[in-house]
Length: 157
Image (tube, rainbow, N blue to C red; front, side, top):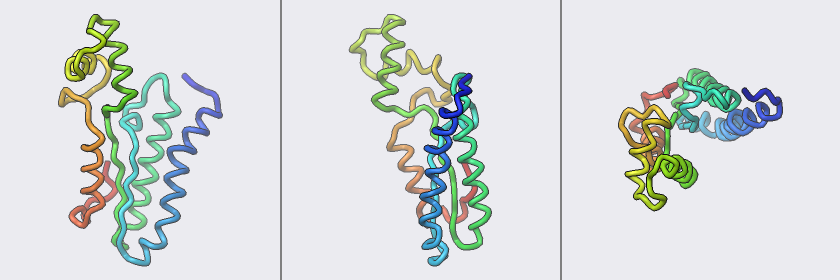
């Protein structure tokens, strides 16, 4: 377990304090307009902290608590606040990590992504749908949460 205070402080600063600063800057205009949307992007690590990164999991959990408190404080003013907790999302770095594991398990280095994904995912993450998510899927969820159609949804993960 990482116990270096700098690691914990840096993670909290990047994940919680940064979101707090941005939110604090935009809230006055949202209050004046009696409408606004806050969506913080966290991580599944906030609910299921990794054994080797308690600092990361704790920061992501703190972001959830901060957003839920904010949602309750501003709901009467037409402002919603939610947290999106993506699970495993496809990225260049994730694909590289999956490929490294797949090659160690005998998959060809140049195997197509679906083959790599299906061979590694069951050992890497808890993903009920059997595939990693995409950035576009997360963006679609955020687009809905910031839309007028999501006026009732607040303090949710």
